[in-house]
Image (cartoon, rainbow, N blue to C red):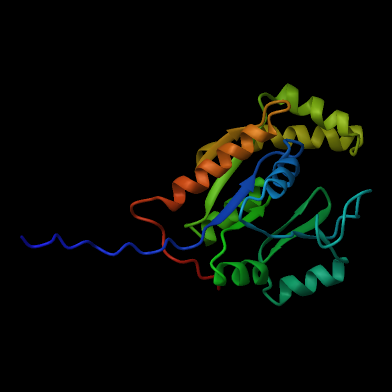
Length: 209
C-alpha cells in the first residue's frame, strides 16, 4: 500500500508584535512581567527625547537622546515610525527590528495608538494588540496615583484616552488590564502569540524598507 505523501511544514516567519493602549494603562508593567517570566521575545527599546524619570535606565527602559540626535535619526531614515507625544519625540528604531527578525526572533514593540496605526499600515503582517483599562474612571485613578503629570497634562491624557478607545476596531486583539491583573494580561498575550504562530496560513516574512 502506497504511503500517503505529507506536505512539508515550513517554520513560521518571526512575528512583529505591536503593543499599544492609552497612557497609564500599564503597558510598561506588562512588558516588565513578560521579561521576568522569560517570554522568548526581543523587546525593542524606544528612542525618546523625554527627560529620564527617576529609576528609568538609559538603553533599557528607553534610549534617551537629545532633540538634534533624534532629528538626525529621522532624517537618515532610521525610524520605522516616530511621533511627538505631549511635547516629546518617540521613535521605533528599524535596526533593532531588522537584526532580531534576521535572527528568527519574535519582536515586541511598544508604541502609542498613533504609532501602532502607522506600523500596521507600513507592515500589515504586524500583530497589533490593544491594552485597555477596565474603564476610563479606573484609568484616571491610575494616572492620578502615579503623580507624574500636572492637572493640565492629566486632562489632556484622559481626553486622548477617550479618543484612543475608539480605535479598537483597527487592532487585531484587545486585552483588558484589570487592577492587579498584569499576570492575566501576560498569559493572554502569550496565548495570542502562540495562536499566531500556529496559523494554517501564516503571514510572510517581514522586510523593512
